[in-house]
Image (cartoon, rainbow, N blue to C red; front, side, top):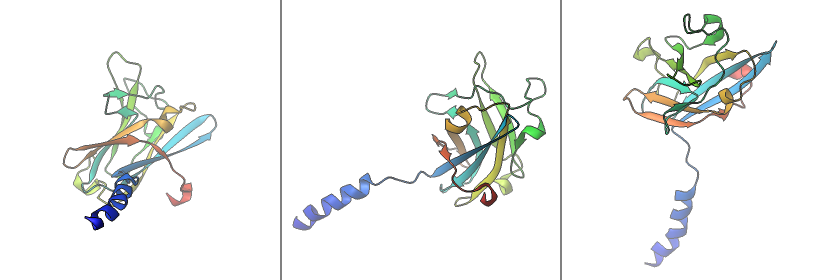
Length: 166
């Protein structure tokens, strides 16, 4: 009993220690000639591969969060290739919601399992250009889809890594 009393404060401290989220999505922004590029880096600490990423989507409420469309986007033509980047095997989409002026950005590994973000891996090369500074691309929530169809949601975090090291 005495040993248990001594261990209780230690167990409480361990339980209260901040936990590293299983997936982190880091964002940086750079503006040139009035166009802002938002670049995302995905850190997979989950036990499953990541097959999709939505930025600007609140999975808890099921609502999109982005107001500004990507540069050059139209309903008819979608996103110009010059406006987005994606890792090899991945595709970018701007997803609108019926009867809403809000949307979200989505990237998915449409090229197959060989292009998934493996457990323990980090992926860069996901970016989108917006005609003007749009803070929601920097502060919104994200939702990732794992290979087993589970979802992990969280808040975007500022990326402090220099751009030449991403």
